[in-house]
Image (cartoon, rainbow, N blue to C red; front, side, top):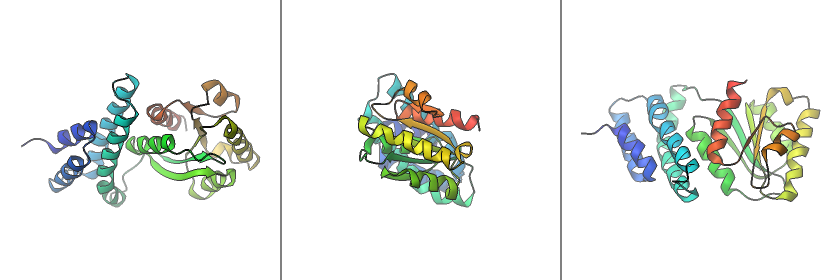
Length: 213
């Protein structure tokens, strides 16, 4: 009899959704708390997936299947985590800015953030500045993550930043940005708190930003 947590970890690395679901159910039946399964198995497994990606041993397809497998486990754990009021790292609203309909990168970032233990509010694509402002004011998110995949929509990141500033809520939220045409220099130039070049970096950046709050 192996430890179900070891099986879950391996199954995430291999992108085996069915095995993850089965082993998470088994771990729960054995009385392992949902928070332990999340913090000691799912999150470390996704952290390793991120490291393998950065080393060039995993590519986007491997990351996606691993992330889907992790989500299968998270789906089972979520009701139990809510019951136990398991602490998350924080709450993040993520969206692709107005005029931009690209969502593959954004979806992968959202999954990696969930895998890192964040509560994620996915605003989708073509998100106007007003919606980002609304989520800060009404849902009290800790971080806003904005992405743009087109050089023509980058300007809407700046417009959103400006409107958040004008609303007087800039000090209430950390802002991180990412997307193919963006650079770290651009992020610094517009006054963002963080920049991530890929999904793995996004999770690390978000954890770093929360440590600064």
